[in-house]
Length: 403
Image (cartoon, rainbow, N blue to C red; front, side, top):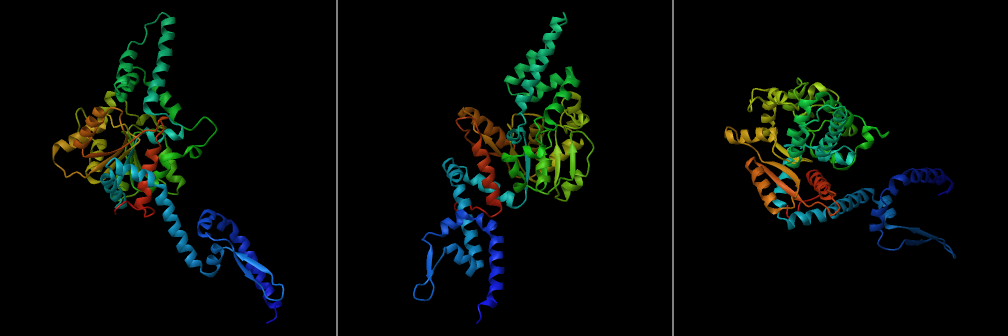
């Protein structure tokens, strides 16, 4: 056969190989694992034959591309499992593997509703709730000092606010500030949780545990946060949130989306852009929940419906006693409903007695905690590893030990 007839075909193959190079280069680590032997050498014909070299990965790709893909998938699965080995061992050592596996099963069955606190926004440069209130107190202290310099009375209620902060009663603390100077609190919240002021867009700030959220849930989300990080995270993944309910604001497609299992968000304390949705004062709490807990109120009724029909996963929350947990306790104590198991991922308290007391309180509300240790430098790396393990186990990328 005249070799000139193959020149055109060889040129096409060469161009095709060049176009594939960037894609195949993404799998260099896989190729290194597959090419456990030296390059294979081939010799040409003639008295002084030319030498040709090829790796196993190249041979497999060009001779059996389906086999190449099968091996790549197997290797990826092995790497994912290897990446989760540390957190898998931790769950085994701390005897939390059973509750973790039941949480994963709930995620697989699409029965999980995340309940998101400020801890999920921290890596995106938004402050935790306690930090926010502490900075707000400093602002009020400056106002108090100015009043004293002008021979006006100091803001005497600040001592009570600080006392509540020391007892982790954050909502009660900010409530006092709000009822004494609503304008200052609303302005501070809006300035703190709106668009970044460091030149970054909101989307550019998204990193850390919050990026895993769409891999765990694709329906209803509850949050105590004011910011719009959750909405932007889902939009970034081309999964916009349609239905929403902000504080005591009238529902906007929320109930319809909730019933149909579509993406929707319930922002318990309101949305940063609309101060009319904020819930801080005693009157606002009465409007939202009733004097006691009134389940004819839209917010209370909606929370109860979610609590009895799906499994909540509390992430980035401290789960100190507040109005929402009071509501959940009331639902449990009523004994009117069969309540599913709920879950929480929480950093382990330093005191064993504190941990036991908190665990008992949560278990009485049908909330099963998964505890993790905080790093020596104060970082929460195990928290993010737990979320990644949940996501990969639920989508089949990783396997639970013994399952």
